Image 1 (cartoon, rainbow, N blue to C red):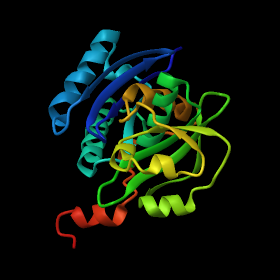
Image 2 (spheres, rainbow, N blue to C red):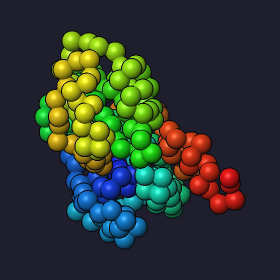
Image 3 (cartoon, rainbow, N blue to C red):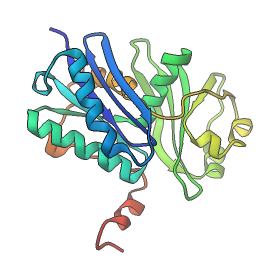
Image 4 (cartoon, one colour):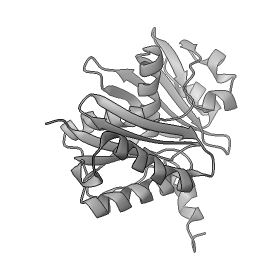
Length: 233
């Protein structure tokens, strides 16, 4: 029987939904800053209708766990949790940075990807990904929030050719020429659920699922997001 996974992401300015049934994917994606709450549910209804299935027929629900916009990540996980509770579905958190790596392979066949999202306050959400022979991705080091100068002081040189992905390269264009290896500018700026659902398939096969109650975001900049909560200083 084909595995059926729905992915939802609102972690950045992009708003997207994708449904995977076996190897087939139905998706919706729209650049919609500040409109996620009005766009996402109709997108979900549309992909389910196109496939002719109900939410309860799914095997799992994947969500963009971050990093990204604090508000955007909260919207996405809140909607995903509500759907998972109602349909009694397990959940799979997928990194927005890993999704951009997969998007870079889908569009450009890149197998070494430098992902960087503009994190504001002079910092980047950063990670390096290498594609494995089975099609999944290997995270080299850790996902982190980091200042560009600190990144340049610590990044390791190698002989691979890397493709960039994410808004961080637009925010800090000088980075591209200062890295200690060959890096080329890619076209992927935002994560897309059609790439998240691909990664969720691997996670589901490994048993990396959680209950709706246990689903949680990844902010990376935890001390800042904690301060933004009501009543915190």
